[in-house]
Length: 248
Length: 369
Image (cartoon, rainbow over all chains, first blue to last red; front, side, top):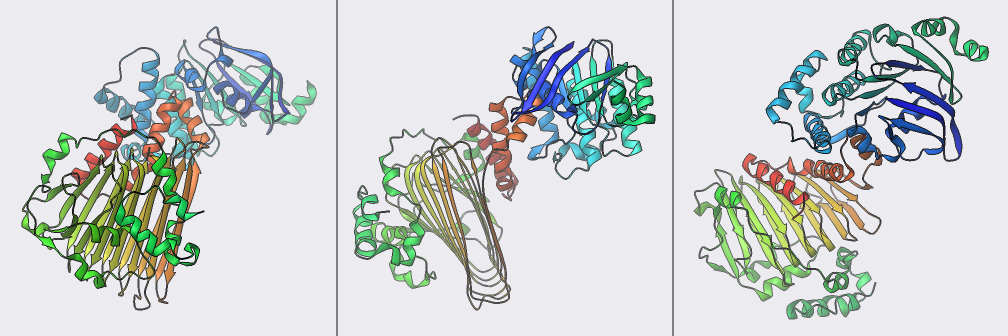
C-alpha cells in the first residue's frame, strides 16, 4: 500500500525527517509514536502533500504510484485520507455540503456519477448517529464553534463517508474525553478491513488500547528508531521515550 | 492625483459642467467632498476595453415579481424640494447632475396590490421617487443591468412614518453605470437595501440615508467578479434619537480590478441613543487587484453606540489545503469559499423567496457566466 524509503524532509532549510523508512501493507494498522518535535506531524503533512515541505531525498510509493508526483487533491481522490490534529474551521460552508462535495469530487475523479442526494443524506445520518453526532451539527458551518471533541468526530465522519484505502490519523486522541475516545476508536475499528490500512500517530498508548495496531514504530529525531508489535507501546508507556531511544 | 486629467474623458455635458464649477476651479484637496472621490480613478475606468456580457432577468424572477417598470407615472419637480436633502458635509456629483438633466417620476408602491415588485431600470430613464408603503410590507427588486452610459440615475426612497420596505438591487453586466440612492426615513420606519454587483466595469453607486427617530436602516453590499474600478460610497446620517443602522459591504476582487468602499455614519448632536454599525470586508484573489476600504464615523452626540470595522485579506491557504485533502480541487474550493464569504450578506435578505432566488443566482454567477 505505502512504502517510504530513506525520506529526508526539510522546512526552510531545517532538516526534520532524516532517513525515514516505513512500509505499510494492505489490511495493516501501524502506530507511530514519538516525542514532541520528532517529525510525526511533518510525516503526515508530507504524505498529504502540503506546501512548504522540501523533499531532499528518498521516495514514497503509494499503490505502486509515485506519491510525490500527485497533487494534494489527487492523493485524496486516490484514497489517502488525513485526519487532522487541528481541523480547519470553514465559516459559511455547511458541514453536509462540504462532505457531499468531497464525495462527488472523488466520484468524478473515479469517473462515477454524482451521489444521489437522498442516498447521501441517509448514509450520512447513519454514520453520524454511530458517532453520536447530532443531526443539527451537520447543518452548521464546518467545525465553526465546534468543541475539540466534535471536530475530531467530524474528521472520523468524513473518513467513514470517504472510505479511504489509507488513512492517517494525526493525534486524533488529543483533546478527547474517555467517551469521545471510545466513539472515535469505534469509528476507526468499524472501517478496518483487509483491504485498507491505517497509520495512527499518537503520543499515548491509551488510544492503542482501543485501536489495536499490528505494528508500533517509535520515531525520534526524524527517523524510526525502533519497531515492534503492540507490546512495544506498553514498554514505552512504562519506560518513557528517552530510555528507549538511548537503547537504540 | 490630478483630478482634471482624470475626468477629461467624461462626455456627459451636465457632469462636465458640474465638475468644472465645483471641483476644477478650486483646489480639490481642500474641499471636503473631494475626499469622497479619493480612490475613484475615473480615467482608468473609462479607458479600459471591456466587453460586457448581457444579463437577462431570469424567468424565475419574472414569474415571482410583478413588473411595475412600464406603467405611466406622474412627473415631479424635484428641484423644488432640494432643501429636504440636506446631508451634513456630504455632496454628490450625481445628485445635482442628474436632477438637472432628467425628468423625475413618482412611484407609489401603495398602488400595487402585489407584494413583490420589479423595477427594471433599462425601461426607465428618469429619476425615480419611490414612496414606501405602510402596510403590508413590500419587497422591491431593482434591476440595473446592461447599462452603457455615464449619465447618473437617481432613485429617491421616501420611507414614510412606520413603513417597512425591503429593496434588493441587482447591478449586473454594466459598463459605466452611476447610480445615486437616497432614502429619507421618517419616524419609526424600516428600510433594508441589499445591492448585488457582478460582471460590471466602471460603476459607482452612492447610498445616502437620513434617519429620523426610531428608524431601522440596513445596507448590505456584495461586489464580486467585476472589472475595472468599482466604487461604493455610503453616507448614513442619524438626525434624531433612538435609531439604528447596520451596514455590511463585502467585495471579492480579482483580475486586476479595483474596488473602493467608503462609508460614513454621521450622528447629529440631537441623535442620542443611536446604534450604528458598519463592516467592510474585501477578499483579494490575486496580486494585481486592489481594495480600498475607508470606514468613517462622525459623531456629535455623547450617548451613542457606534462601531465600524474593515478587513482586507487573501484566501486562507490552510482552508484551501483542507479542501484539497478531501479531494476537492483548488478551482472548486475557491468557488465554495467565495460563496461562503458572500453568504453572510445573502442571509440578511428577509424575504425567503428572494433570498433563495439570490442564492441560486449567485451560485450560477460564481460558476461562470
